[in-house]
Length: 250
Length: 319
Image 1 (cartoon, each protein chain N blue to C red):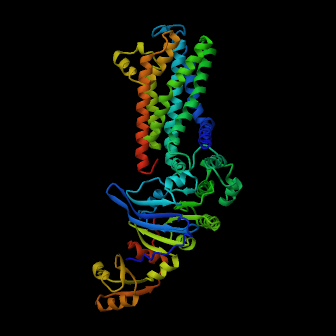
Image 2 (tube, chains in turn brown, blue; image 1 turned 180 degrees about the vertical axis):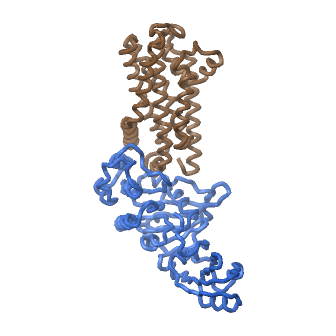
Image 3 (cartoon, chains in turn green, blue; image 1 turned 120 degrees about the horizontal axis):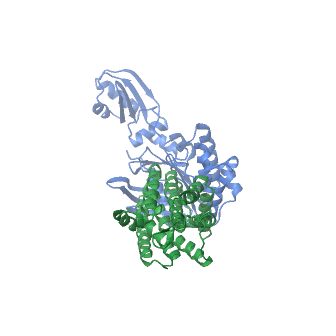
């Protein structure tokens, strides 16, 4: 158990020490929030009853979580596997499954400060005012709902090699971010794009948060979609891990 | 060729360090290990010698529980490979290809600190640092190490848990001559402390000089097994070289004593177990030849004879 904790700490510390990782995961959502805030009047009501300033804050929280998870898992994991470190860990007493689970846990942990930071920027620059309870609920909800992103990141890291990881992660960030309606409210999209957005986990993750702020309460449908994604991705990772293990690679 | 003297090993009552019984491992249709048997006693330093693709890395992967056998049994320190690894009784330095085998974005000291925490009874940090000779590298980020330095750090990672048994898969692959020498000095020291060391190599000199015993593997089976000196004596091969206008490989292969024929243009090298008989047969064959030369056997030639690999003598084996 102490071995697992040590490994978890090691992973988190390594993420937080990476200048490149922090610049991308924290820089992108915060920068985009400030850049896009005055694209429309911040008080404009978009998509239901949420104002642009709130919509953008929640969306950038989702985007930040997405970017953090895909970078922490995807590119870093495939580089690490290519270097032979992942295999080296397999011949230490740490259990085989702990590599994957620790990666998901460490990524998820790093997502939290990203969410809080974007929220602070929303509060300071965007003029977002919510009750203390709502802030806490929103943060907790977005955080838990970001778990499928962490698993997706790890899955990408397992599927692609170090060279292709970067373009794949970039493409996923674009597809899930843009088509997931994180830069443009879904209500403003054409019908086919709306259908596409509703199929993506990023849309439902942000939608959970928006519904909460909106006063619609807990989005059961969003939750069902996210849980399904989580289960499917977890199974995919498990399958890939098994395959690699039988070949002596994992 | 069947020079497989089965050395009687005194395991002193305890389970041997490792036992490999009738092991079969395939990759698709390709048979990597073909009913391989081997045994290593505790405290032994054993080299697995063989050309690339002989099955050395597969053997080590099976012994570490990274692969499962398709047949036969694998036992490490009296238990299953996975259990031995989980108990922290085994350390390993695996082949990493072009990678460093170390996590990026962290100092060497950080990696060692983590690895030590993964074991229940790690060796004191100073001891590991001393054994691997990495005192000056501790504050260095892992991505700023030369090939030889990274290799030393990986050796430190392999021994940080104070294992009873250490596997090293081509440990000196990225090293120059000088670091190679100091690496083996380190290893020998480590082995003298009563630990079992199994290393794979295709460097014959390494196998001969470092190991108590050499197990030659080719095409997934053990072709020879014994101390380096014994192997050399057992093979006692000679090279018979000459030049001829029309080398006929099949005819040359039939000559008395010949175990291997290498033809390079008009130059012919015969590996022979009985040079006198081979030369006599050559003369009687009526073949016209010139520049006849007979040279003694090195372990290199013994190795070629054993593995029946058509590699020209003196030609550097690919790493």
